[in-house]
Length: 130
Length: 118
Image (tube, each protein chain N blue to C red):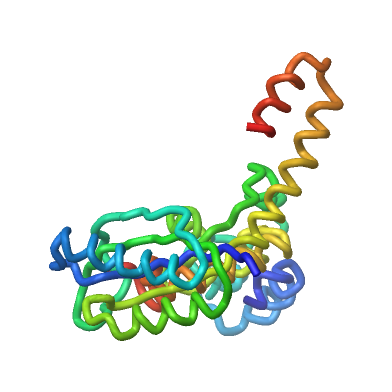
């Protein structure tokens, strides 16, 4: 069962850089030990929160893109819940949305191909295979 | 909000009946501003209302994601509520995705549940 999830979480604004890295690496090891893999890690930096969360007005946003099953996500969420500096998290499943977008893109591409003369088709097919 | 949907008929009746109460003018227009808010949207007869179009269809934005809160913030009123379709002109499928995205963004504190983002 390979699904793609986006795991966004907010840690306290006064958390040190090394601690963030440590937290991320522990999460990554948890992912790999249960058979998933981390596709991408993005630190989105410090941002002002839209409302107060646990008496904090700002937080550091971190986004993980994870591939794996539901049990893995369950485990990750449990970990985030018990990790003290994490003040909020959100998991969103993205693979179906991506599939839908790809489908639309394909339809648009084929329509565009039909209209102009086939000069660009070679580069486009190269991009798809790459 | 009732003024917005049928402004012409209520205007004609209201103007005729209220002549007795008004001492300075015979026919004042019924509630020029209306309760509908700041847009001045109750157009009706006087000026032509431009047809609203779905922003996502026109600009071909397919991915309505909770992460680009700047895009979502255009469809959130100052009070924090999601602006209805009849005001923004967003088509039904896009509004559905938009509302889920806004709700997700609210959950992760990118958008406020109520009030402005302080």
